[in-house]
Image (tube, rainbow, N blue to C red; front, side, top):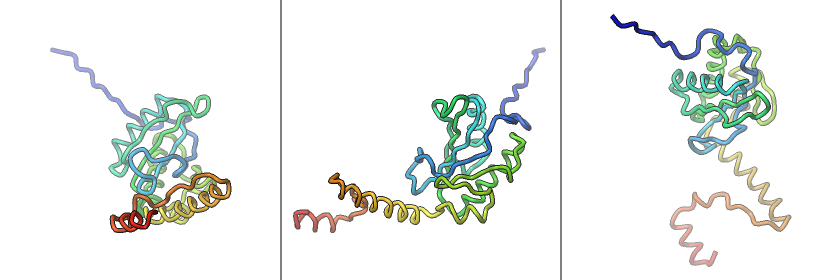
Length: 185
């Protein structure tokens, strides 16, 4: 008769109590799995790399809408790591963020109401209706917002005598390219 050991890996109730800082940033970091216009990137702060790796595993195994999760390669501050979570930029993002925070309470003992959501350096309460107003949930709208930002930056580049960045080079179709070529542009 052989002695079998049951290996129970993973996170259990309140395993991450005292390990997380109750803030999450939205779109502060660039997407790893695709373009920023298609992907929303969340960043959670955790106090150890091992706990971060456990949390990455928990996100990836537990949520079909999480495209990727990973822990930062190093500390962002002494004793602090980031856990990045990526999901498609869709209208369901605010609801999914609240779902993640609600489920995290079982690991962290931090109630949803105690979390702070940071979008564009502004702090918001973890409420779906609030997040719908401050997170860009449409890829098209995201591109439009970034194009306006890039146009303003190009104006500053031009005034400073620097080379301007082409905003829509990849969106030109063959006819426009051919026309520009004939015109010597």
